[in-house]
Length: 612
Ligand code: G6P
Image (tube, rainbow, N blue to C red; front, side, top):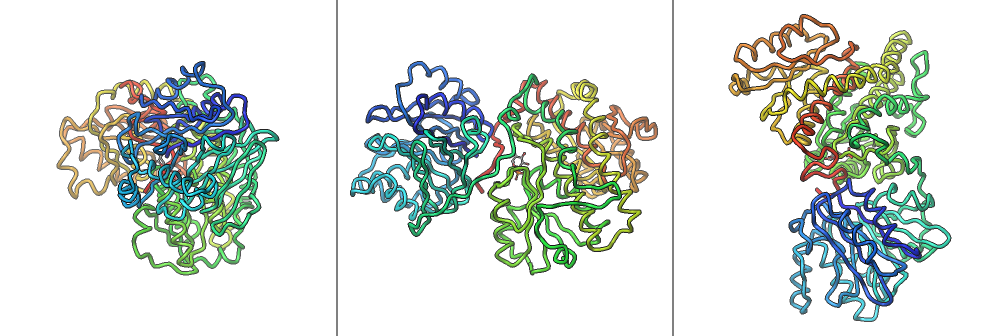
């Protein structure tokens, strides 16, 4: 959720930290702060102007002191309101130790009570500040910063990424993590710490992962990492597949519209080399032997948010093509059930970021219970990619807008490729059938391009709905996950109450809510349930609702039932979701913009959710 960056050995640590924070801002933007070591003193500035804190810090640039090292943070509030005194970095009582934190210290109350009894003075309501005081106590007993962090990490419970500096060791940064991601990097003269690869790519591509409970000491040009037992570990180099430019807006009004437009490319890149003309598949990073995949008894997909909807969209293909039973589960629920899992269960985690803590822990739990595991993610070498037995990488490039668009459609398409792959391994499709399906999947970048080509039409249509307050999104079969995603997008971006519902289930309760004030959006592209869906549309029309119909281009039968029509190119229903979702992305985008909302940084949300 929050973003962390630390720099040592630079002539301009303030500039590098602010550049990094700007790139990290999508992770959290309630407040931000920087601490620098200048001479043998700490200089700290924080700001809590939502969405503007980094700008405020940038304005301080000319007044920042000469320094060689510093740490910075951009926050998504969990404990304590998004105020300046709760913003990171936090300092100890002496003001000589600074810490930035991402995650949650679960035993912070217990630690705080002990620290308070010992006479420490805390100045924030955060769970994070206790860590600065714990380190202070260790330093007072003679430890250096590295040892102090090693000892302090042992008493912490929860998920965390932490970076520290001390005025008494001006060129040293110390970092540690458990579950939350944190990486370190170096050039010949600089050392770096960051929660995110993209924030430091402008300085170096020589980056290393820090493992769970390891502690890293970063100095100008050098890195030392030890494990929880104190033994030195060889740092694991990270593979970096993105350039710096991919994270720039490049002339678009915002990242979200850029990323909607990038979908054809994201899908094409995700498919490159994976479907051969005869319908066979190549998934080289999968790493699980074909014979093991062939014997899988069932698939459980775990995910959150839009990734969960991508899982629902891919389920039909896993069942229908590969003939494998498949359930799709919300990761935060799955983890705390007592799921029945054995070695024939394949647990497939879907996560754009590869680090959502609910999905990560659910994946770990599945592994612990003996499942084979695969993660479908967009981030190479991310936490989950390192945890799972096999990986499926979408190749969508970095997604900065908080609400997922190009990663969501890339996930759907890659899941369909995986379903085809599994179907072939399990000999559930004839070569002819596989070739037809392969060609349909391969046509998706072009079809999505045609849908994206109607961005301005969708936007103009959506603007008629700028005042809506309550919307039902309905769908059946392939349209149901699309309806769920449409509703989620509208909630996230436009702050409009929206519900995604299976159209056939309306009559069992929610139809009582339909009257002439209701707006109902229906996914009515052609498929096996088309006739039944038309009947469902009639039911809501009869009660006076305003009906928005998403249908195939030129489909008069569906169009006639609508007050407002959104059209997409016709496509086979088994692979239709990635095409159908595009107008809903634009719908939410346009309504949010019309209401003056920040589409890249919607209120209360964060791109990467590293708390439970
Ligand atoms: C957050 C984001 C959503 C995303 C979800 C899952 O809630 O705002 O856009 O779908 O996390 O993220 P993941 O990285 O695991 O796909």
